[in-house]
Image (cartoon, rainbow, N blue to C red; front, side, top):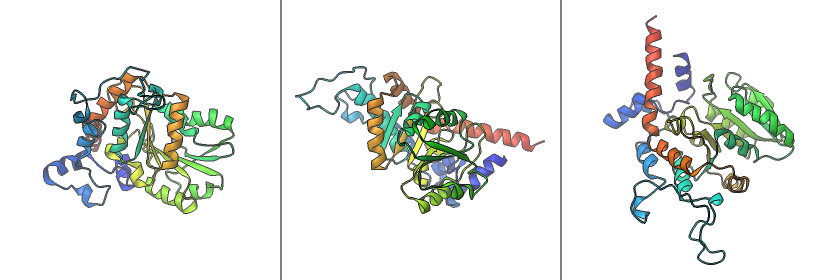
Length: 310
């Protein structure tokens, strides 16, 4: 219960199961009246339709097909119908990436072969001599990736307490700081970092610092980091984004043009992409992501009520 309350008080739980239900039937909830991130009444519709329009499909299929072809016939040398080679993209991947971006009202979405692949590709946004500040409560796999590989490239990671020490970030920011990494709620500790307050501190120091938020634990249904000031929202789609334990995939969404350009080339050149069936299944998971959120909320509420009786 204390974790749940802390989450709400720090403006992280921007939407709850009760607010979703009350919004559907009566228009507004108690949480909405407390000036949280506005409830998006079209979230479910966006999840289902944003990435694919049946009217634009040649045969009118209502969900995107799995495109297995790797090679595309060009109309003329250097002239394509939108796709040139599957490593650069295809209709199946595009449908998923459009959906991912739309759910956070972002401009661009990118899918990778796993959550850790997305983390690794985020590291490639940096250069030798750059500094990175990470919350010390991040997923251990992420911390290990920075410690093992970022340091090889001459990138210096620093891990600090951004959850309870409100001045730690201000003391740690340096002229060479190029990226700040948050994960909130953290996996598995559920520690909370105030995204909006953290972004304000960073912007007052240097507006060009990239802020990445690993939003895997809440999904865009409850929390949209870009709306709170972050530059990149990162997910392991294997978790709530898919929800069926049959997809291994990671994603990043952003609205910054400079980041978009880098991620586009990283994704294309490194070939760190998933299987076509994963794009399709990942898309199916996004179709029902709003419904998947009700179960963990109900479970946590039940645990809270049960503990309250002791």
